[in-house]
Image 1 (tube, helix red, strand yellow):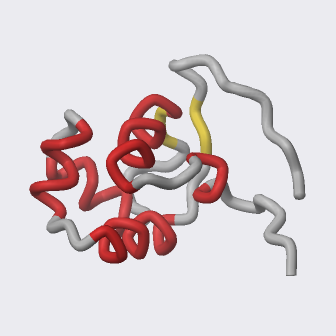
Image 2 (cartoon, rainbow, N blue to C red):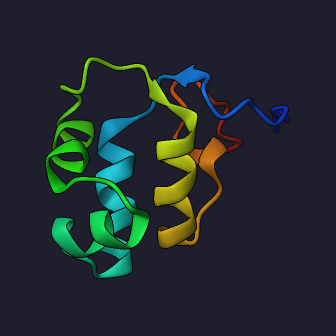
Length: 84
């Protein structure tokens, strides 16, 4: 397992868009509800989930979504090591 340091609020990160969408679906949320709970626009969430946001995106946006989904933000980072 790789430990990742806490990042500043404005740092940009690259995420796994598919895993972001799966996390929302596992939580049973529609895009609108998830975006509202996280305090972001639905269009922003839609672009993030499609990987067309112009990634990387702001760490704070991912942190908010992960709080809503109940997951660790590090689990969405591209190239994060997944132990098997």
